[in-house]
Image 1: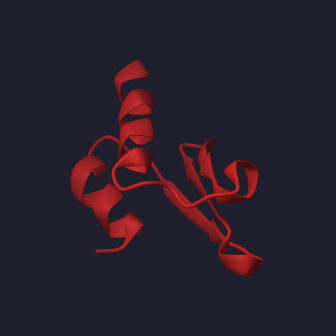
Image 2: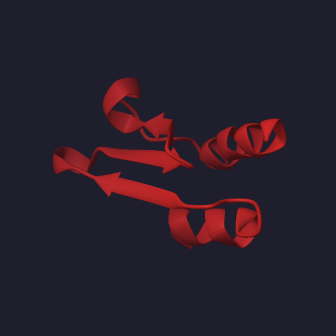
Length: 63
C-alpha cells in the first residue's frame, strides 16, 4: 500500500488535503493541511514504517 493510500485509509475524514511532493533522488515531502509533516530532503533518510502516520496523527489530535 502506498503512503498516500495508507494516510487516506486512516485519516480521510479528518484531513482536508494530503500532498506528497516527489523530487529527484527519491526525496519526498509530506504536507498535511498546508503543514510540512515529513521531508526526506531535510532528514536525509526514508521514514520508518508508521513514522509519517504517527506525525499525521499528532497534527490531527491538535485540531
